Structure formats: C-alpha cells, structure tokens
Image (cartoon, rainbow over the protein chains, first blue to last red):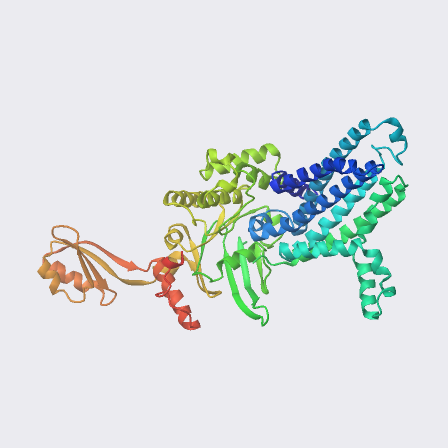
Length: 268
Length: 326
C-alpha cells in the first residue's frame, strides 16, 4: 500500500508541474465564469442556465483532463523508457499501475475540487446580484448543496473514464487510446438507447450487438444528474451511493484488466 | 551461491505484422557469475546484451529458460531490494530534479525522508553531480543523465549492480571516475555485471567476461584464463646489438629501436626464442627482457565475433569492427 501511495504522490507531483493541465483548469474556470454572461441573455432562466453551463464546463474539461492524463501517463513511461529503471526497483507491476491510477485519481479530485470551488464562488456572487423576490422564484437556491451530488457523480464518472483510458494505454498508442476511450464514453452516454435498439432496427444481429454493448459498456448517462439538480428536482443519496458503487465496480474491473495486461507485457 | 545464474535463457520475438516470423534475440544463454566479480558482458550491436539485461530485470519474459539473482528468481521484489540497474541511455522523469529523483527512488526502497535525502546527497557526490542536482533533469546533458542513472542504481548500496553501457555518453574524465567507482564497488564486495562495447574498460575492470554474438554465447570465463593461454609470439629486448647483426637474424617480424643500441624484436611463436637468444648473446649482445605476446581482449573479441560470423554467415568484424560498434 505504501509503495502505491509513493507512486501516486509522484504522479500527482508530475501533474502539478504539467502546464497543459493548468491551461485546462484555467480555461474551465473561465468558462464557468462566462456562464454568468450567457445567463444574462436568457430572461427568467438565468440561474438555471448558469448552473447547467457551469456543471457542463466542469464535466467536459474534467473529461479532457481525465483522457489526457489517462492515455499519456503509462504510455510516456514506456515510450521514454523511464519504466526500465522504475521496474527494477522493489515494486511490482501491479503496484506501479495502481499507483499511477491513484495519482491520477488524486489529481482529478483536486482539479474537480478547484473547479467546484470556482463554480460555487460564482453562484454565491450571483445570489447577491439578484433581488430577494427574483431569488424566491428560483426552484432551488443559487448555492444549492444538492449541486454537490452532481459534482460527486461527475467525479465518479471522470474516475471511470480515467480507468478506461489507463486500461487502453497499457497496450495501445495514445491516439488509439484516446479514440477508444472517447468512443466508450460516447456509447456509454447513450447506453439507454442501446437497450431498446431492436425497436428502431430490423436486423436482429445489430440489435444483439447493441444489447451486448449495453451490458458491456458502463452507462455513463447514469452519472448525469445535472438536469435534476439544476431544476431543483430530488436526487436521493441512495441513488448517488448506488451509482458511485456501480462506477467503482467498473473501475475495479478495468484496473484488474489493466494490471493483468501490464503484468504480462514485454518492454522491448 | 552465485550472484547471477542463467540456464538456457532464450528469447524469441515475432517480427512483421502481416506475416510474423520469429527473431531469435537470445538463444540458450547459460552462465554464472560469482559474488564479488566484475563481469563484462561483451558483444557487437544486436548480439543480445540488452535483451539479457532486460530478462534479468524482468522487463521482458523469457521464451524458455530460467534466470536467478542471488539464488532467487528474477523479478522477486525481495531480490530487487538488493540490486541496482542502470539501463542503456537512461531517461528519468524530467520534471524532477536529480535530488528529487533520487529521493523518490529511495522512498520506493522504503527509506525515511531523512535517509532518502542523506543517500541522495551521498550518491550524487559519488558520481560528481554538484550544484546541478537542483536543476530539472530535462536540462541535463546525456553524460550528466548517465551519472544520475548510476547514482540511482546505487541508492540502496546494492549487492549486485547491472550496468548497461555505463560509459556511454561520458567524457574521458567521467569514464575514469566510473571505472574507479566500479572498482570501489568491487572492493566493498558487490558484484558488477556490465555490458560494454568499450573493450579497454572491460579489460581494465573485469575478472570475468562473456562474449555473445547473434544471441549466442561464444566465449566466457576468467579473463586471465581466456587470454593467458594464447601466446602468439615473443617480445625480445636486446642491448649491444648492431643494426647489421639484427638484419641477419631470420624470422624477426618487427624491429623497433628504443635506444642507441637497444632494440625491441617481435618474434613468432615458433621456433622457440632460446636458440635465437643464444645466437644474439654469442654476437656480444645482452638480454634486457623476454616476454610472451598475449592476446588482448580486443584480439579475442575480434576472433570470436569473426568465427561466429563465419558460422552464421554474418558479416565479419573486419566490416564491423568493435570500434565502429560503439
């Protein structure tokens, strides 16, 4: 466990010194802030638009960070051959992979935390600029604790995306890993449609394939509760915990696969 | 117990995407290295040296065969605590400083933060990295990275050290320092296994060598045994001889004047030099010295590579000399 933690801290340190990462986080914070301006253009809908855009910005930039870090971290070690000296040290290949993932997870937690803070700060500022009667008409307060549920599930979704990216990066190039990870994410986002695919296609084989993908690929749509929290609709803690556990099961499966592949690989 | 032992260690790769065919990188390597030895692993490019080191570090898995370090299978984490490894053309996390890298490596061995700092400082001093230790590694030259690579390999004061081309990228001063460092490691009882193209370094440092060509072991043993038995001529130094007298001596291969009446004569192995020596003395000359001319490691290397090349239909070392493979 200690070895995994040491590798994780090293990954986090590397991320902290990564300029690309800073650019993405700054851009996300900027976009969250511009949600305020866009909200001004939509009479009566402003707070919902701002909340929605802010969460979408965190989700999209978090996705970019997760894919970027997930596909490059292990690949870079192999390509630049820094892995040669590292694997000669007293750590197993599984500890190496799990340490890398833990470091990425730590990086994501900090990044989503920073973006979340910027988001809440902007919403708190918004609340002060509206008259009390306008605020009374909102379905939920500006600084709504329920938004934490959406942020939490975004984080779980990003941790899952990172696990997918890390899994692919153990055996393929960054480009292919990025394409495959994004493909999995897109398919997983529309997972519910795959379930009922036979109602829109005549081919039984296409329907069977869609059904197979539905069971195989994680349902990323389940992590999206933005609409509910923005409109003040209830999202139970049971749902949040169950969905997080669902994501955790996939993360464990993907990491097991990544470790199995990485442990058998030749580093030529 | 041997420090390193391999038995019929073999590695084949598949090359080609559409029609994969096997490439025999290493074929049945069996060798043993005793503890406290400095072992030179020699061979031309593509001979299988780096493949062997990667197999010993379990960076790749053997197709067949077996390897042990300190009596335990390679890859065993307990063994990794007792060894050090410098890869060829090492590359490290370039966002770290040399100091940070060594502290991180120390942490992987489970040392406390204070001990990591102390060990990092000691090892960097040992390889001659001064104030640059606080610079990020991306600003380091190849030779400096090589020194950092050696420092990280020694952080745990290993019992067995594996160096893949340790002199690569170093200036003459750096090479001399590393030679001294290897001798210091030997003096404290460590086993050093290093691959090299630089035969003079191997000759100066190694007690044992192995030569691999085309993935096969062609020669191995104690350097003294490999070279001592191959006397290929005699070097006779005489004083008090005239040039005319020397020219009348039959069978002299080369004559070099080293003083007013002092000459070095290079003679073939046969006939034995006693008869010639008696003739010279009868002409009033005096003997200064008589020494056998033995093969150097380079001679042995060239001969072995040539023989293996002929057997396997490879190019001879005349076309690819050891110097050109550096």
